[in-house]
Image 1: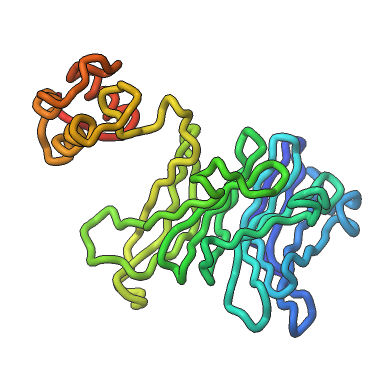
Image 2: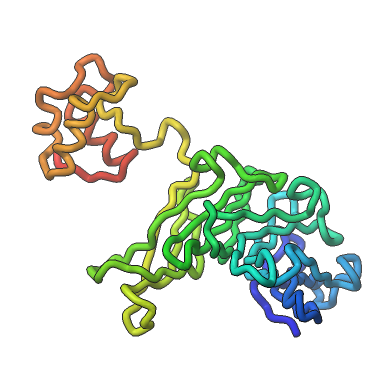
Length: 292
């Protein structure tokens, strides 16, 4: 049996369909499977075995549910892979395919990459994105559904240490409304916007009772250029001082307007030494809309 998880359309019109395929074994339940269809609707005989192929990743339960095409035309397929039949640990996993099938050069020569999220026993891959610079981003939920998590891989399939310092990032899904604290959170997918932001979405609630669930969102900053990042240096003097920068930020967060917040706290030698400059920095870099 086979299930469909996602599809991707190449520039020339070919269609890739990906999903999970029954491996026909009691110890290997599912494998990644990919089919390539030509623009005319026929299986592309040049891909895999007569137009399709299966790929065991960790060899127990490997389920593909997302796909993305890189700028060079290669196909990335993402999903969730179980470590062993006896263990409950799952990992995010990504496999790469070329025009004719499996790309064995990806992931340190394995052809695939798997990511364990901070020792979490449950890490799933729900959505996969191919970024313009050749890197990829896979998102899902981790730690028994408690958090959303994302991993970024370099073009060769190895973790990108410039992403949050370790190649992975975690954040809580948050209900836009006012509800009790969420203890159950599931990520269903995500969407990129702009050059540096990812929104993940799903549902969450204070218990495992589905009647308590609400729609939830979280935003992850992917890789803002250094000149666009929010830092504690409020006055732009190149350093962070608790009695100046920290005081300004605290005052703003307490609801003071910027003119009052910077009074007696700003460094006149800094590049942001007026209320207008600090206000603009807070808005454009930190997303804080403070009154002048």
